[in-house]
Length: 119
Image (cartoon, rainbow, N blue to C red):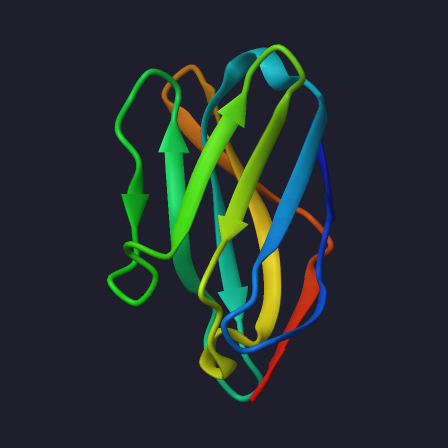
């Protein structure tokens, strides 16, 4: 099992910045990819950014150039630096980790952290 705990959400004005953190614990040695997803009210959960172990980062088009995902494997943490925030970025942000067990990929989710951007 993998446990994920997010922090860093809050209320910010448009144009501002926030940094989300996610701490992983448990069977972290087999984590392949970590990432951030978000879900706005009435909408489906969507990918924000992912960062695989030793691979290239991937971003949703809507956040490219504004958000940066990074990973500290020594601390078992993943971060999301969010700049130039817009009201449409308002959502609950979830940390995700994918663990590979033999040939199966298992996904884990954090409890989510609210990000609210006021206009």
